[in-house]
Length: 410
Length: 146
Ligand SMILES: Cc1cc2nc3c(=O)[nH]c(=O)nc-3n(C[C@H](O)[C@H](O)[C@H](O)COP(=O)(O)OP(=O)(O)OC[C@H]3O[C@@H](n4cnc5c(N)ncnc54)[C@H](O)[C@@H]3O)c2cc1C
Ligand code: SF4
Ligand code: SF4
Image (cartoon, rainbow over all chains, first blue to last red; front, side, top):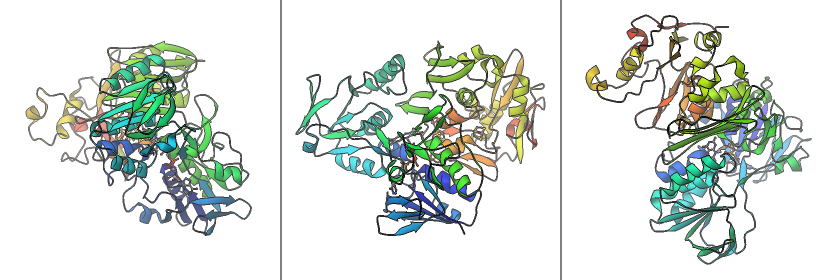
């Protein structure tokens, strides 16, 4: 019987378990989970603070999942190192776990840049895990002033989650706009305005020069008093285990289209991995939940001796803030086509007769039709693209394509 | 398994299926009180251009991207039928961003909904199929079209 080991117990691990079981019903699966919780939906930690979900509903799989798939999880235990020759993993509880196939699904860790005076801040948090959210929940009061460092997805989601439960929120970022890695300036301005209308204050193009008891002195000279600090500057893929074992890493653990690392029988998936991005044709870390599942699943199938490849990952985000929905996908490469309609902000990026990326604020109905065009690299001369820029609809495809999609099982 | 298919040569673009769907899933017995003067949230919708119309609902994909992408673990597939647990859904629209067919849309309270083949309501058979005046929508077993 084959022995499978998975390091990490997030969504990539679930994909891996389900991938293994789709191919091998009998092998022994052991999951090493540093976090002491059954697998939960990491993106829901802000919705938890907001009261839109609870600890039970935010579990990723229901209670019978582990029993059904037949897999053992070792909670609160870390993998310390991998020995790729002996094919064992050393655990923090002293055990040496042998494997026939290993998947590293270790996610990412918050990046904490050195900041002057940070040690003087008593109430400081990152926002990456359920325990982070629970600790933050303990620290906040209805009057407290929160400073969030980082106006990326995690910082802004945290702001939304805390909004109704705290006195005030200030968000600062070195970048001159919110969500700078996924939005252009005009889109960012819209989102910022919407958040400001909720009372959230922004200090952009600014950073903390120094913390002192109860306040942050900004580079701009402003002093921001606060009670609770959230650090959401960015995350770094957890690559150390593979790197120290001699595997190739870049920003993430380098994987091929079968999710294999350069170490024999060692695979990687999810936020820790750097796989192929179809929209730009290079390897990129795609730290997104759908990608984690899909990579994990492909890794699992291959670990069990099947043959799966996943080379259709693309960056994509669907996020809402206080009722404003935005979606982005792909790379912002090539000619930009602006197609605003009504309140909707829409930007499409086109190169070499292919859709490369888009940004939508509002106007998100059926947007998966666009995403599929990026994923499939659909030649634009085969579709009615001007119709598509006004609304996503399958009416823009030829009758033959529609028959293929809607006339039989898919 | 049986799925819903639309013959676009016969679809009139009359939108009746949308009303039948909204009524079937309203839980109400009287069509007028379920629909009259209300915004409806059907799980099938008619698209088209230049006089060609077709109604779109969930394909119940063999390899459903929505299931793999839902950030809340709210979408699952059981016996071939892809279903949403609306209690778990947080309305992030990630499923809308990944479904290649444009088959999902939020319902009245923001939680996502899509065709579940009328298995969750009391219709017994898909209401869009039963109610289509031109027989353009069918519920049957088919292989892949290509
Ligand atoms: C606040 C927030 C909001 C987000 N919102 C979205 C969103 O809207 N949409 C979206 O697509 N994505 C979102 N994401 C990203 C998404 O959560 C991740 O892409 C996804 O969870 C990655 O899954 P994973 O399994 O690769 O990693 P993780 O879920 O991070 O799991 C890795 C696990 O491995 C454990 N681990 C690490 N090292 C070891 C070790 N040595 N031994 C044992 N265990 C170890 C970690 O503790 C962790 O539990 C969000 C993330 C955050 C933090
Ligand atoms: S919602 Fe879309 S992706 Fe999901 S099963 Fe239906 S058609 Fe497929
Ligand atoms: S909108 Fe609901 S069902 Fe769709 S991906 Fe988000 S949580 Fe899942």
